[in-house]
Length: 291
Image (tube, rainbow, N blue to C red; front, top):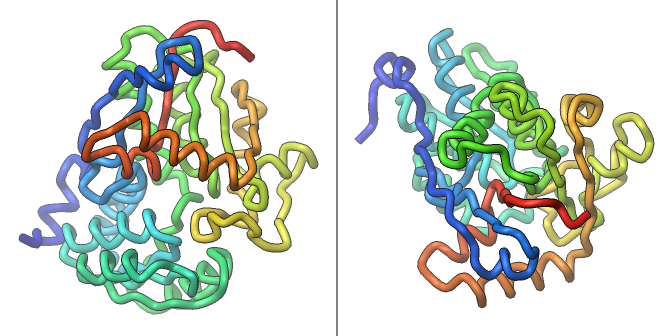
C-alpha cells in the first residue's frame, strides 16, 4: 500500500537491519572467521536502499515532486521503491544492455523506465537532463553526501552485532558509494583502524586506476562483463577516503568473479544464496589478516 509523501518523509528509514551470518565455507578458505552481511534481504533487494532511501526522504521533505535516477539496476530499484513509498513518481534511466527482468522489476515498483546509452555514464547524462525540469530531483546512484550517510548505517549494525572491530571489511566497488559510506561509518563508530579491502573486476576498475594515478581517472569504456554495475569514473570522495583509512584495492578478472559466484552457490545452499552472491553488500572477517 502506498504511503503519503508527508507521512513517509517523516519515517525513520526504509531499510531494515539485516542478518550477519557466519560463513563456514569462506572461513575454511580464509583461515579466519568470516561473516556475511546479508543485504539481499533488504526490501529493495540490496544495500542501496540505505543511502538512496535516506536521500529520497530528505529531498521529499524539501518539496521534490518527481525522482529521476540513472542506474544499472540496484540503485534504480531502490529509488523506485523509495518513490513508491513516498507517493511520488519516478523515472529510471538505464543503459541499453539492462536485463528485461530488471526493467520489469522497476515497472513493478511503478516507475517509468527509459533505456539510453551503452554504459552508466551515458544514462547519467540523460538523467541529469531530465532533472532540470521543475520539481524533479536527480538521485545519483552513489555520489552524494546523503547517500554515504545512509550507507554508514551498515557499520553501526556491525558494531551492534560484533561488539569488537573485525580484522577487515571486504566490499565491492562500482562507483564508490558503498566505500564512502562504510568509511564514514567506521569513523563514526571509532573503527578507523579497520582496513577495507575494495574489490573490482578488471575493465570496470576505475577506483584502482585512480589510486595508481593519484587522481580521478575516466576509463575509456567498461570492458568487464559487469557493464551495468560499473562506472567509468569513481566518486572523488572514494579516492579521498584512501588518505584517511587503510584501503587495499584489489582487481580480479571476470573469470575469477564468475567462478567465485559459482563456488559460493555450491557451498552456500539455501533460498538466499543467489542474492547474497550477487549483492552481499559487505563481508567481514575476524582474526589476523593473512595479507
